[in-house]
Image 1 (cartoon, helix red, strand yellow):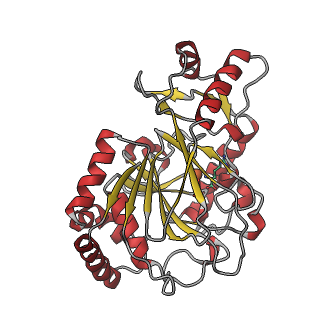
Image 2 (image 1 turned 120 degrees about the vertical axis):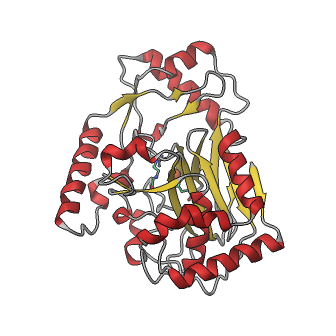
Length: 342
Ligand SMILES: NC(=[NH2+])NCCC[C@H](N)C(=O)O
Ligand SMILES: O=C(O)CCC(=O)C(=O)O
Ligand SMILES: [Fe+2]
C-alpha cells in the first residue's frame, strides 16, 4: 500500500493547526468549516500534502494509509451504541474529525448521502447491536463482503476515507483489486458491457431512515428513497469495468448482484472476476490514529468478522465519502455548494 508516515514535527504542526480550529468550529458539519476546509488543508504539513497529491494523481495503489496522528483513548470516551446518538456538535473526537476532514479535503470534496446516517458528512462505523448479522459497516459477526462503496450509485464516491479511533482486537479491513491479474480479453470485453444488474445495499434503504428535519428535506428524501426502493425492486444493469484499457476501473458489489439466467456469458464473466479478486484479498488492521483512503475506482474493501462487546470499548472508525468532481452530482444537490446528494 501507499503510506505516508508523519514525522514528529509533522505531528506537532498538525496538532497545533487542529487545536486552533477546535476553538473556531464545533463540528466538521459546520457549513463555514466545510467551505474553508480546502484552504485550511494547505496549512497541513507539506509532506502530507505532497503524499496525498501523489496518491490522487498517479494512482499508485488502491490504498493510502496516513500514520502517526496520536489519539488519546481516554479523551475520546466510550464507543457510542448508535450513530444517531453521536453526530454533530459536542463530539469528544472533534480534533480527530477535523484532522481527518482536512486530509480528505486534499483529495476532493466530502459528500453526504441524504439516505445515510441522517445526511451527515462524517459517518461513524462501529458495531450496532441490532445490526450484528447485517451486511452493514455497523455489523460485526458476519464477514462484510468486499465491495466498491455504493457501487449501485452513479454518483458513488471517488474515495472512501476511514479514520481509526480504536480497534482493540485488531480487526482487519480487507482489500482487493485487479493488480497483477490478467483477465482474459473476452471476459474483460463482457465486463465492460451493461449486463450486470445491481441492487442498493441495505445502508441506503428506508428501514434505516432516521430524523427528517424540515418539510423540504422530507420531500427530497422521500424522492431519494423512492428511487432507491425502485432500484431495489428493479435493479439496473451496470458495467463492472470501465475507464482505461489497461488497469480498468471497478464497479461491483457481488453480494448485491445477480445476473439473470438468460445471460450465462455475463454470469461466467462476473464469476471469473469475483474469483480473481477473491484470490487477491489482503487484510490490514488499522491502528488508532491511522487514516485510510481507499481509491473507490481501483480497489474493493470489506471487513473481517468479529465479536462485539457493546460496552463502549468496541472498534470505532469514522468515515468520509469524497468526490473529485462535485458537478457530477449537481442535478441531485440543492445548490452548487451543497454537499448532500438526494
Ligand atoms: N457487500 C456489502 N456488504 N455491501 C454493503 C457495504 C456496507 C455499506 N457501505 C454501509 O455503509 O454499511
Ligand atoms: O469497517 C471497515 O473496516 C470497513 C467498513 C466498510 O466497508 C463500510 O463501512 O462501508
Ligand atoms: Fe465499505
